[in-house]
Image: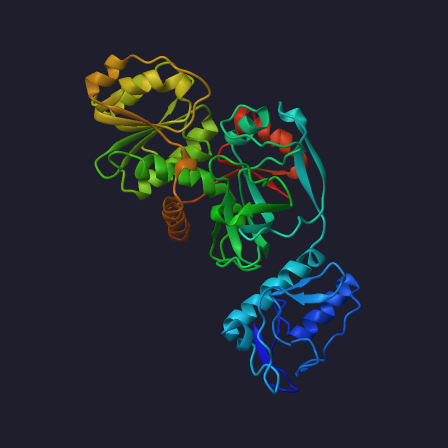
Length: 443
C-alpha cells in the first residue's frame, strides 16, 4: 500500500490502492454509484461550508438522497479539520473506517457473477442442480464473503442433503457445503482480523452448512481462519475437516493421546480421513500404524504413506491379521470410520486400556459389553463441531506446520466441477470409482 498526503492542504489522508480514498473522492464515487444530487467537495476542501472532508464511515444515505451524519460529529476548527484523527481519534482508525465503507460500497462492482449448487428439497443426489449466482449482498458485521477456490465434499454433506442430520437448513432452496477455502472479497462493517485478499479456510460450526458449493460463500467470521498467503487453497480445502478430525480423534479428544509406544489401527484408511489419521499418527510419534482398505490402489497408497501393515477389510479374517501382527496383544487405539458395521469387532482387538475413536457411523450397532470389560477399554465419539475456536486454531496450527514440514500431505483424490456436484456426492459415499483421498469441487 502507498500513502500520500493531500496536495492542497496536506491535512487529509489520501491513499492509493486497496480502495482507500479521502472524503471528497469517496463522496464523488458514492454520487456516481447512486446518482446523488449532492454537492461534492473538491479534493482537500476544508472549511465550515463544505461537507467535512474527513473519513466518513459514520455517514449514511438519507432516504431523501441527502448525506447525513450518523451519530456525533464534532465541529471543525477555524481551519477545518486539522487531521482525520479529529473525528476518529487516530489516523489508523480513520483509515480503517474509510477502508471499511469503501469496501462495502464497491466490492460487488469488482467481481463477476458465478454459479452455485442448490437443492429445492431433501433427497438423493438428483435433487442437486446448478444455477447462476450473483455476488452476495453486503455481509453483516460478523460475516465474511469469500470467493471459493475449492470446496471439500464430506459424508456429512450428503446426510444434510438427505435431511438425515442433526443440523439441517431451515429454508429452501439451500446451497450445500460445510467446508472450503477461498479468498476474502468483502467483510462486515467494523469486523477486524480479516482483509480483502486474505486466504481463508472455513467450515460450518455445530454442523451448519456454509454453502461452499458455490462461486461465492458468505460465512460467519467465527468459522473462518486465515491462512498463509502462499498456501495452496486446494490442499487447504482437502485438509480442513479430514486433518482436524484426525487431530481431534488421536490427540485432542482422547483420554490418553496417541503417541510413542502405541499401536494404532485405522479401520478404513484410504479415504480422506483415514489418510489424515495415518499421517497425523506418524507426526505424533506413533511408530506402528496398521490400516485397512478395500482396494489394491488403496493398499499401495497406504504403504507409500508409511503404514506398517495394510489389511483388506473385504476379507472376514482381516481382524485376525491385525491381532497376529501385534503377537496377540491387540492395538492401543482404533480409529473407526464405520462403527455400525465394525465397532463390535474393534473392541475385541483392543489391548489393555485400549481406546476406540468413533469417527463415522451410518446406523445403530450391537456390541457385547463384556468385551469392553475384559480389556477395561474406552469408546468415545469424535464430533468436530463440538470443538472450541481455540481447539480449531490449535488443529489449524498443527495442519499448517505439518504441511510446511512435509509431515502432512493432503491427498486430493478427485476434482469435480460444480456442475458435477451430484456425482461427487455419490462418490464420497460409494467410492465406486475407488477414489482414494479427498474429493473436492472446483467452482
